[in-house]
Each structure stands twice: as C-alpha cells, then as structure tokens.
Image (cartoon, rainbow, N blue to C red):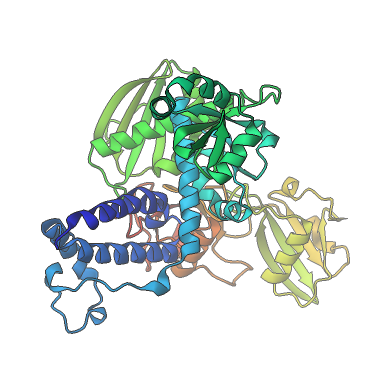
Length: 556
C-alpha cells in the first residue's frame, strides 16, 4: 500500500533537525572559521546527508528533489555509483541502511543537549529575555551521572545557543532549593471523581516534594483512597522560599532533566546585548542589500548624541563587533568617493543610529609609522664570530612578548650559536631575569660568552635592518592572539635569511595565526595594489603590508 503518512512525517522531522540543529549549530565550521580541513569535513558530511535525503524523498517530492539533485550531481564521485545513470535522481536506487555508522550514544547525547537548549529557550521566552542578551549561568540537574557527562561533552553548543557564560551540572536539586508541587488535571479528574474531586484536589496540593519524587519514579500515587497516574497530575518545580535564591533562577523541566537559568541582570551582559543589537542591525542591512558573505564592505556608523550609552557601548565592544561582522567599522563621515550600497537610520536605546554600507574593505587604523613592534639591535661576539641582528620583543604588537629566558633562546636560534652560555649587556650592565626588556625598545645590546664588551661605547641605537609592517584588515587573529599589527625583517642576521615572497606570505600568516587561511597581501587597504610573486622585497622597505583574509569556499 502507498501509505505516505507512515514515511513523510519522519522525513519532515528529519529536515527540521538537519536545518535547525545540524546546519545552524555548525555554521561556523561550514563557513571555514575552524580551518580548511574541518570545513571540508563538515561540507562533505552535509553533502552526503543531502544526497541520501534527496534519494529518499524523490518518490514523494519528485520536482524539488530533482532540482536539488541537479545542483549536487556535479560534486558526485561517479565511482561511488558505478553502472548507474546519474542524469536524474529518479534513475538512482534508494540508499541502503548503514548500521555501522549509527552511534546511539551520540544520538542520545545530542537528544539530551536538545532538551536542555529547548528548556532554556522556554525560560527565556517566559521571562522575555531575547537570546541576544547573555546570561551568567545555566544549571542542568539530572539524576543520571552518565547523562550529565554527555551534556558536558556538548557544553560549547549549549553555551552558544542559550548565550550563557557558564554551564553547571548537578544531580542535587536540594542544593538549589528546588521542590516539586502537583496540580490536578481538572478536566480529567473532575469527570472521574465527581463529588470527591474537591477533597482529592486539596490533598494533591498538600503532597510533599519527597512523595512526588517517588511518584516520578513509579508513575502512580494513592491520594484519599484514589489511585492517580501520570496523566492525572501536572508536576511543577518551585523554589524553597527559605533558600534565598528564588529571584536568581528561573526553572523549567521535562520528565528527565531540570534546567535553571540565572536571570539576574548584569550591566556588562546588558551592554553586550546592545552590541549584539548593533550587529543584528548591520547583518539585516546586509541581507536587505542582497549581499553575500564574500562581498567586501566597510560599515560607517553614527550614534547621536555622542558620548551617550549606545555610543559608549559600540566603542567598548568594537573588537566583538568586528569579529562578528567580518568587515571594517568606521565612524562617520562617509567619504564622498565611497560607493554607497545602502543606508539606514534607526532608534536604539534612546539614540539615533545611522548605518551606511559602502563597497570595498578598508583598514580600521592609519598606517603605522616606524617599526610596529618593540625591538632590540644585537651585536653578537661569541667564539670569535661577530654578527649583527635584530630581535622583535613582541609580534604581533602586544602578543608573544619575550622575557629574558625566551630572549636567550631566540638569540641562540637566530645566530645558530653552539652554546647557550651567553651574557647580554646594555651600557656595560648585564641583563638578568628581572630586566624589563620592553624598556630597552630600540636599544642596542651586546651578546658575548661572558665578558664585558669593549665596543659598547661605540654603539648605535638606529635600527640595523630593513623591515615591513603588517596590518590585518578584515579579520581577527587566531591561535589566541589579539594584535592586528605586526612586523617582519627583510633579513636577519646581516646578509642571511633574506625574505622572499613565499617567506613573506608564510610568515605573515604565522604572525596572526592564520596558517589555515588564504591571504592576499596588498600595499593599500583595498586590494588594488596586490603584492605578487615577482615583487622585489627591497622596494617594500618601511612600508605597511595589508593582510586581507579571503573567504573560504563555503563563504563564497
């Protein structure tokens, strides 16, 4: 028999899970933000799922699945479907069940995670707390410690979806002052108990939390001589008024898990919520202008009156906004020559917010004058060999700051010394572990095997080598780095390790932790003056190279 109702509801549920859970929660991976290799795995998984889904749904929705298949078929490995006509989805057989890839433990863990997220969303809706506004803590209470382990393994997804800072797992309801109370189902019990309904209702409301916990386990309870079942009662969680935390948390539960959200207001979190509102306005404006992630833009903004709450929030959360919108953010005025795409005015937090999107990416800061990072000149005389060099004390600016031990290791590596027993001098004073290296920025130091250098009086503090500054334009650094400005030396030591284009590309990516990204190196904050493989490195001396991170395949 052709019973659509036995199959279609399950397929519809599967499409909902794929769209609202897998794709939604892995969008950063699918856009390549976790690296090219992880992006490829995520895309291949999604392709495999869509290909199988199209074949399953083809008999029920022949036209839409054929359209989807025609977009997918160009990516199919023909060796995986030998001796078959691949010109139409309707020429392919239904996929075979692969029990080897079914992992019930993972499915159970994801189901637990989904329950926690859905319960948390209900609490937010009940308290009228938009997801854009972060909360301090979500507490998950479950009697099964294995279930808590599964939930803990997916902590990052829960924190992101509920926009909370901290996840706490517990098996102890009493710690949070949680009690159970029961309410009768008036319609069901009224018809069944008739005249006894009033007395049974009073007895139900008087049941103790311990009695109701036992009822949760067994599914039955006797009240006033009447046996009641799960469908007769509604169990609700309440806070013990003596516990003193009823105002801090809001609770919601299903049959197995109890979720508490800390709903106490916090100014820093309210500020972040407002910053997310600004991000939301920018992203909606992008969508309204029919822009795609690979379209390079610069966002100009104005918040009036100046110095009020909204303007201060934008200024204090500028890095957070830049990291999310993946575009430059600049204050008004918009340059006359800028190619305006779209403009919008809105009211937000009692301020007037003007947003303008213009074509092309732009740098946030003006070019750096001089070497962007703190440095020291070095004159090395060890084992009779004399060499000159430079060491950057930080790179990028504010990150990877050297201490005395690291400085000695860097010197040994750069100059390929055969001994680690070296002494470092400045003005005839030997450096020690307590020396503040950053205070020596721009100075000339002497490295010996232990003796005081006689030539120290002849020193010079001018930079010994040619260099280029680096500025990251349209992305944030990775690998726990924060600085967006760095520097590279065109040679180091003297006459050695001359920088080539390949070396420039590799080292620029390394400085900002972007080794998995595709970059474009330019001499301007747009991509008009791209540095190519045949460029002379000497012509780049003292110039700023702008690093543009190109979109991945998933973002194109």
